[in-house]
Length: 114
Length: 113
Image 1 (cartoon, rainbow over the protein chains, first blue to last red):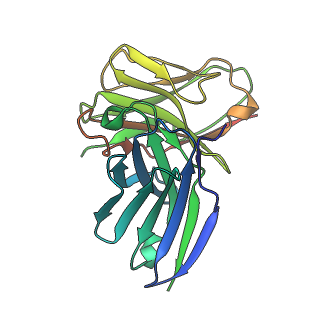
Image 2: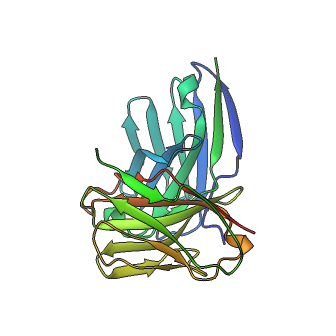
């Protein structure tokens, strides 16, 4: 039972345009959400997070939106750059920032073309 | 340099031969985790530990064991590896105060024949 789903295996975007990566979840107990980026042959690195008490969080070119009623979150990258090409994972937890258990989605491969 | 190290980075073994993948962090982090990455399934948590001698199951613990005898080390043990445990494994650690700063190791590519 996949509690966190990223239904788009891949996304291709032109440099300078917006990239929108989507993530859906089924467990209504999830209250903290994170996005990670992963390059080949490296471990994932943290990108941005959001608590369920918010509906938006921004960090530079990256913005995460949370729609609790739809159990949906999205990551917006504006403007997209070739260096953003990577696999993006969303993740969710119960227990806020004190989480131990973390559930990831399947990942979306983002390719940004120059 | 703050880091999470894993050994070995690559391992090919045979079914049933016990193996241990070591994980060590030098950041004095309380929380440590093991994940496996498989095509189409993303990252799945195997076990996590919130402090020394405190471990709990993640989403896919079957066939794995862990121990946390020291704060810096969190080895993953496969008592009797099977081909379905062929995967890319990541260890991670974080300070309990900082929810987003989870540091991942470089990964261990395991093949069980």
